[in-house]
Structures are given as C-alpha cells and as structure tokens.
Image (cartoon, rainbow, N blue to C red; front, side, top):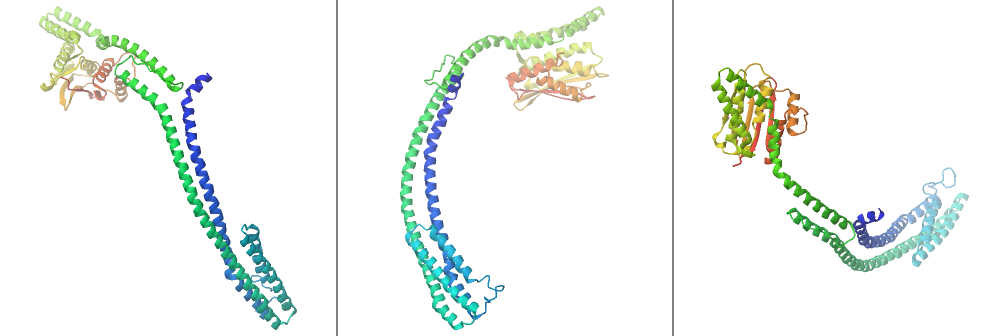
Length: 485
C-alpha cells in the first residue's frame, strides 16, 4: 500500500523538488540584496537625523542662551522669586537638554572624528553651565549689574559662540561622513549589481536546464500516450503503451492498455448487437400498438358483414391491409412522408368507421415535402394519443387535423385536435414522459416517448416534438425533422 502511494505521488514530489531548487537561489539572492539595501538605508537615515537634529541647536541655541541671560541680568525676566522664575526660557534647562542630546549622540557615534566633536561639545556645555551659575548667583544676591554684564560678554557669549562653532564642525564632519558613505554605497552598489547580474544569469540558466529536464520527463510520456490515444480513437485497437518510468505514467499506461482491451471487446459486442438494435426499437413500438385496435377492427368488420354492409367491410379490410403493410414496410426504418401520410390516413379511416359519430379528420401536406424521408411510425402514435385521450373524452364530434409544411431546411409535421385537452399537471406529466424524466408503469404515453427518442437519436437534440394543450379546447403536437432526401 505504501509503495503504491509513493509511486502515485512521484511526479508531484519531482515537481516540488524542482520548484524549490529553482526558487531557493532566487530567494537567497533577493534576501541578500534587500539586506544590503536596508543596511545602507539605516546608516544614511541615521546620519540625516543626526544632522537635522543638530542643525536645530545650530540655529537657535546661541541666540536663546544669550537673550535669556541678558533678560535675567537686566531684570526683565524675574529669576529671584522662586514662584515667578522663568519656566519656558530657563537657561539651565536649555543647557541640560543640549548636553543630554549631544551625550547620547556621542555614545552612539562610531566615527572617531565625530565622537571627538561631540566630546568637545559636551565639555563646553559643562563649562557654560558653570558660568551661568556664577551669573545666576549674583542675580539672586542682588546688585553686580556691571559685573554680570561683563561676565555675559566675556564668558557666556564667548562660550555660546564656541558651542555654535563646534556644532557646525560636527555638522561638517557628519556631512563628510555622509559623502563618504554615498561614495561607498555607489561603489558597493556597482559591485553588488555586477555580482547579482552574474548570479542571476547563472540561476536563470540553471532554472532553464532544470525546467527543460522536468518538462521533458513529463511531456514526452504524455505526448506518446496522446499519440496512442489518437490512433485508438481512429479505430486502431492494437495500440499498447509501455513507458520507461516508474511513476504515475506507468499506472496510467496500465489503465490505458486495460481500457483498450475492454473497449475492443465491448465494440465487438456492440457491433454484433447494433444491427438488431434499430429493428428492436421499431418492434417494441409496433408491439405497443394496442391489440384491441386489431381485435375491435376485426369485430367491426364481422358486424358489418353480418349486417349486410359488405362494401363498407371490404373498404375497412383494405384500409387495415394498407395500415399493416406500411407498419411492416419490408423491415425498413425510414419511409417517405407520402407513405407516412397514407399510413395515418388508413389508421384514421379505420377509426372513423368505428367512431363515425365522434370523429372527423383532415390531412393537409405540402406537395414539396412528400418525397422527403421520415422515421417510420412518427405520426401514428401521436394521432392515436389525440383520438383516445382527446376526442373520446369530449362530448360531440371532434376533429383531428394532420399537416406538413416546409420550414427552411426543416419540415414541421403537426397533429392538432379539438378534444378535451389537458390540465397543466397532465400536460407536465406527458412532457415528462416524452423527455424521459418520468417513467410510467402503465406505459401511458410510451408511443410518443418512443417517437421522441428515435427522432433525437437519428437527427440530434435540435429535433423532436413540442406539445401544447389547453383544457377544454384541444391539444397540438408539432414535430420538427430535417429535410432528408
């Protein structure tokens, strides 16, 4: 059991293996390219953020510090009252924020020149913090205005200028590092692209070779089997397929060879039976003609003879003879429309002798269709159905009209009666019998169903009969057949 399971899935495993062999190198190449791009992006993004953040201090730190300290010295910003001390422009907060920012950058820096710049900046900010404390102490003590103004000019503004210069030096060094990274990335990108192109070409060649090998191992056996199938379809039952593989194709070949043998046997059997099949169909239909029709007709002839109506009896015998002569028609399954019309005429003449009080009929066939051929016993079962299920159930005399007219490349044969008609459920039941969807144990409607099956078997599903009926008004059956000469 396990061996059969592995055998049936061998082509599947082979395909999956080839797919992974082709996909993994491409996936590895794509992963390497993405990792390099991400690394370059991360370094470049960090440099941009460092420069952008530092440039904020370059633009505002010196001006904010100088102005805040000046306002504190002249008293426009109250520093002595703890409750009203500056909160937004606190010089200590400005220095602490800058010191924390540049200390963090220093700890993350990897380049020596940048790290040195940031180290110098942190030291200057520490000195600036001490000089600010000197001025703030004098302000809180009171007085010292001239001394504080001198300290502002000599210490504070000088130190903020140095801080600004160091910030600009850092920005310059970081921009230089960015340019160096750009050059490295450009050079590395060219090398990487060349390597990737070479690898891609190698991978594509490998994939082409592997895919060709895979498709060849699968399509060649399939193509051979297809050739065998075409030969078999043309009637060559000697074909036999034996692939040189141990996979699903071997199982398929065994099934194909077995199928060819079985079909050959079946075709031989069908060929022997096909000759008798069509005759059997007509025989079944003929056997379904109600035996009471013959018995009643003979009884009527006997009654006419006893009553002295010899002329009518002779005419009825002639019609009966014509009727059965056409039914047999020397074993032929197709007859001319003219002969089919005469057959229906004989049947209706016989029935009119029997039901002269309730039955009348009319035959109207176009001359141009009389020599075309039709399946034998196409109209008689329909006419019989119109008589027994339409006219006999109606009060008073009824009419059956049978017509035939050309319709393009087809012919329309119509049987119409003004009998009792059918209700919707009865009409649906009859249509179901004709289409074969309903099987009736009492064989009601068997003749019409047999006509429909024979028409579609010989002419195709585009042909057959269409039934319409209105209760209390009558029934109409239209048969469409092709023009067959």
